[in-house]
Structure formats: structure tokens, C-alpha cells
Image 1 (tube, rainbow, N blue to C red):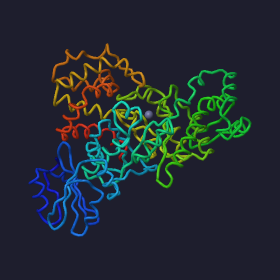
Image 2 (cartoon, protein in one colour; image 1 turned 60 degrees about the horizontal axis):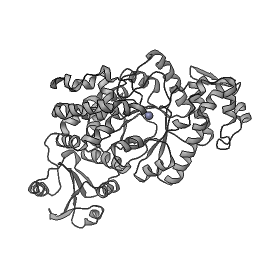
Image 3 (cartoon, protein in one colour; image 1 turned 135 degrees about the vertical axis):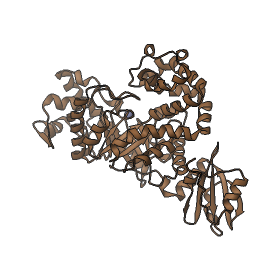
Image 4 (cartoon, helix red, strand yellow; image 1 turned 120 degrees about the vertical axis):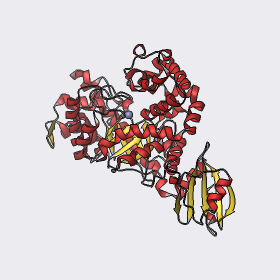
Amino acid sequence: MPGGRKAPWSGGDAVSHRLTQLDLEPLPLSHVASQDVEYAALAGDPPRLAVLAPLGGERALADFDGERSAVAGGTLLVGPRSPRNLAGLRRRLEWLRPRPLGVGTSAGFGDRLGLATPGHIRALRAVGGKIAPIFAQQSIREMTRTGRAAQDVVDDAVWGAFAEGWREGLGADADHLKTTEDVDRCLAAGFTTFTFDPGEHVDPGADAADAASLRASVAALPWADLADDEAALRGRYLGRSFDLDHLRIAFDEPTLLRAAAKYGRAVAHVARMERHLRRAAGTSAVEVEVSVDETDTPTTPAEHLWVASELRRLGVRWVSLAPRFIGRFEKGVDYIGDLAALEGEMAAHAALARHLGPYKLSLHSGSDKFSVYPIAAAEARGLVHLKTAGTSWLEALRTVAALDPALFRAMYAFARERYETDRASYMVSGELRRAPLPDDVPEGQLAALLDQLDPRQILHVTFGSILSRFKDSLLGLLRANPEAHARNLEAHFVRHLRPFAS
Ligand code: ZN
């Protein structure tokens, strides 16, 4: 616990004494007063919530479940960290309500275990600067594999922010949504950023297709959904060039047909998803990210321009866009590819985002790309979102390696068994044959496995399998050692955030 400071309850020491009698210890950073009511998170497994209402202010307690007692002239409620009590906190403490972040520099901290937010917050504080955080971020795929509901993801992140005393606002990103049912589920849970992934509607064959098959693909586009026809499309692009800073993009027929064949159905799908979201959200504030990062072939600047122009024409509003960049943004490791070429591409994508938006460039699989950050920060000029997820899971495993080597070794052995199956939906190049066998690694070297590409990716993508077998022991260990866990996360994320903090 930071400091050992006491929470400064009003009414002197009476509340502290009562909590001590109950063997409960407030997390000092969490203590906060709002409209004469005081709140604090109580340490322990499970953690609990304390709410102190003044005499005459007991109405505030109607939002919370728990045991009430008279103390210091008011009423003290001690209750569980339950969904209802979290909803009460969000209702009464507006900075805990997820909100859209807009186009300023931001970072997403996907947290598969729901225990990482305090470490993320410490890293944000350590680097200073203005990076707007998304602490609740999970794809439907991750929710399925971790066995978490959308509401768990929001609740865990909000609790972490409350416990750590974060009052500067937070976002919640429902990541890689593919259907309108996904949208409804996540809207109901309080998510405010919706990342649409139309990857299944991107045609991976378009890059290599010949002129005849491109013409056939374009003729077969869902023109009604696109509120368009082929003649109008040609009229908008062919023979025209678009000047953006240093960049001139011109559309000849092959360029236009390839962009339309590759992304036409994706554009129609995003427009459908966005219309559904706006209708379902009503007056609630929400924002949209568009991501095509999980597709086979890179998004050229001309294709980016085409996609953004067409979405705009269809009235879609978005705050960030994730192209599929050149090279390999693999899970959990640094960029693999030609950095100079990536720099040129990022300059073009960033110029497009400035001129067609402004909106942010979103870096998906953004963790551990330490060689890319200076480039992205320089080119995007503040219009950037860094999205990370599995790297926090790996810091949880690093914590396990230090605290319970036998448990870590068993997890690693199981991850190796599962890797060939579990890797299917991820961009990874790690190979079992290059990764050390569990019994060959001395105890003191186990954590170092997390610094080698092959074992790192093996442990990264098998999280669902590992959780299916080891969830209780893993969570129990981390809950019992929150400081060790937070220290690892803080050290790791300072390296991610510092290039974007200036
Ligand atoms: Zn992604």
C-alpha cells in the first residue's frame, strides 16, 4: 500500500477506529468526499467499499448494499465490491463513469484479469503528461476466453480507478466488435468507445486480383447499402488527385477498383454498425473506432483515403482508425519489418487522419513496439491511440514467476501443450521448437522466459487455456500481492507511455 497514510475521514478518528475494530483497512488514495458523503476502498480479498453519510444525508446510502452502523454522528456503510455498489459509485462519483475520450492522445490498457488498473494508473502518473486512459478494454474474443462478461470488464476497471484515486476520467473500449449484438451487450455494460472490426468483410484477394476479377468484384458490391453506384463512384475519384501536406494521392482505375473491391463491403458493414450504435445509444455519449488491423494485407494510403472518404459520405463519425500497417505488429513483441518504410507509411496515414478528420491513428497490437513509438509520436502529432492488451497479462505472469515458480512452470508447460491450437487467431511467429522446455529452465531464470520472443508469444496467446486450468490460483496469488503486481506493470508501462507523454 502506498505510504501508510491514513484516510482523512471527517469527524476525526472515529471512523478509522471503527474500521480498525472491524479489521478493515482503507486504501488511502481511494478516500474521497463528494457532496458531504465520503467513500473509500477497503483492502483485502475480497475488497470492500466504505461509504460515510453525514447525519441527514443517509439518502445517499440507498445506492449501496452493506452493513450500516452509527459512527461520528453519521452512518457508515460497509459493503461488498458488487455490481450494484459499483453502479452506485458511478452514479455518485462522475469521474468514475466511462466517457468518450475524443481525439487527444490516448492509451488503451486491456486487462484480461481485471486486476491491472492500479499498475496502469501508476505508470500514467509516473510519466505525467496528458494521455487519456481506457482502463476497461476487451474484445469479445477475450471475454469469451477469459470467461468474463462485459459488465465485469467495466466494473473491474472502475474499481481499480476508484481504489487508486484516479479522478481524471476514463474511457471504456468495447474492442473488435463484429456484430450489432456485440454492440448491444457492451452498450448495456457502460462502454463508451466502440471499436468496429469489419475484417471479415475485407476481401483479402483484392491485392493480387487481375483487372477482370476486380471489375467483377466491384460490380457485385452492395451498392444499395453504399447509397452509391459505380458510375458515381468513378466520377468521385478517377482522374482526381488529393493533396495532403507532402502527399499527393491519385486514383487511376486499378487503384480505385482495388480499394473498392477490398474495402467496399467493410465500409457498408461499419456504416450499418454505426447507425445501430447511434440509434441504440440515444442520448448517451459514445464514440467509434474503425479497425482493419487484423487483416491479411496492408492498408495503402490510397485505400485509407478511400475508406475514410466513403465512411464520411455515409455519415459515419469516428475518432480513431486502425489501418493494417506494413510489416508485422505481432503480439507482445517489437515491430518486425522495415522501420524506415513504416515511418514513410505512418507519415502518410497520419496526414490522412489530420486532413480527413481530424481523427487518431490507432496502433493495435501496440504493446512492446518500442522501436515504433518515437516514429508514431512524431508523425501523429498527438492524434494517436496506443492499444495494448496481452502485455499486461504477461506482467501478471512475471509476478507469478517471482512469487510462485512452481505455478509458473506448470502454466508454461500447459501453454506449450496448447500453443499450436491457440495461436490460430493471432499474428505470432513464436515456435515451440525454439522455446526452452519447462524442466530445462532453472528457477531463477523463469521470469526471463518472458523476455524471449518464443516463450513470450506462447504464454501470450494461450491465456484462455491457462485460465481454464489455473484461474483461481493465479488470481489468488495476484490479489494477495497487489504491490508486486502493480510494480511490474508500472515499470513495463512507463516504457510504453513515455514516448507519447511529451
Ligand atoms: Zn486490433
